[in-house]
Image (tube, rainbow, N blue to C red):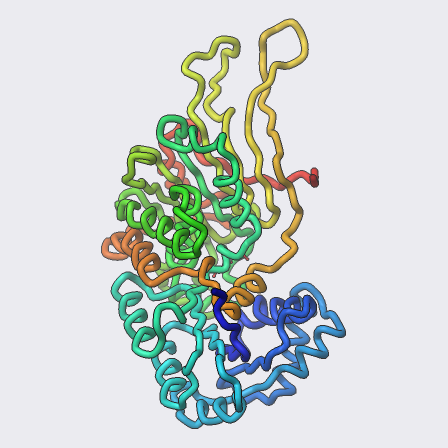
Length: 463
Ligand code: BG6
């Protein structure tokens, strides 16, 4: 049975950075596809008018993908605005008036988690939660205890089935394809384990800094910003067993099992870095010890993965913007022809961003008499960009009540359980120069002599 669709979208944080960069472009794209004709109500406490919000939406689209005149005209017509303090009951009374005879609103909390409680309670007191759903943004809490507290706050008003915790990585085409590739190809399963896989590396590199988000970032840091959520979720999809059945719950159950099998991190296996110049960023504390880079080694305690290191690295101001997973396979037991090490010859590579790439590394013989080989890469998929924006896909799913790509209460808590030990015993911060691959201490995380695999600019070979 399909769930009923929401019939109004209310988004808190309408004047914020996320709305500017991701939400307005997604809304315009959905309208363009004819997938969104309901009222869209922006909420903020900025002293703005509806016209100012429309101008902001226009500006956001100009800078993030372009304005489509027809779709923007519809977006403007559908847009409403409530300006008010999130702690003031009058704000929710105004919202209630605007909702009119809306029966199933979708409330999207694109605001800091510290405001969730006030907003959820304000909505409930004003009678705006009947048949409603709620989307909450990441990071969901600061650690396990605060995530559990947030879950309790949400559950006072919403059932778990009405809560959609967003992790936009799960809406990326490349991440979807990774999942598809794994379970649509029978040849993978026999090698997808500790017998054949030597190590797994995932690098999320960004060539830019904290941009205008210094104050936000300084509250969070790389581990909370992208590791606890995006990267652990990607590893869960990479490493989980096949779901039993096609229901969204089956997928979520397997992912949860995998997250629960991740061994809590050992602080000695984590290197934290901070780029030189971070302390001068607007909104950043002068003596901040917050990391803008993290490298770590994670283990998954299952029969399939015991002993296989999963290396994770993420940071700002690195040499390139790219997210890539490389699954290194074990080398042949004996090198019969080549004299050189074959250690990195066989691999699967998943480029998750900005392009979508799936490829396999192999060796072939060079032409000529000598039995000498060279590495080649077989490209199974190469798309320069995804057709759909992740937020577009996720908002559409939430409107339709499909939880498949959202994180459940127990899986978000399981992910915090993995990361929590690092906060209890914060390690030293190592400075690194912008444009480098982070502090040299990060090199020691990878025990393999080949070191980290650095993502490179992708050559254009679309297929
Ligand atoms: C966000 C983080 O969740 O993901 C940002 O808060 C990061 O710091 C961003 O830059 C990366 O996502 P994408 O989709 O732009 O690669």
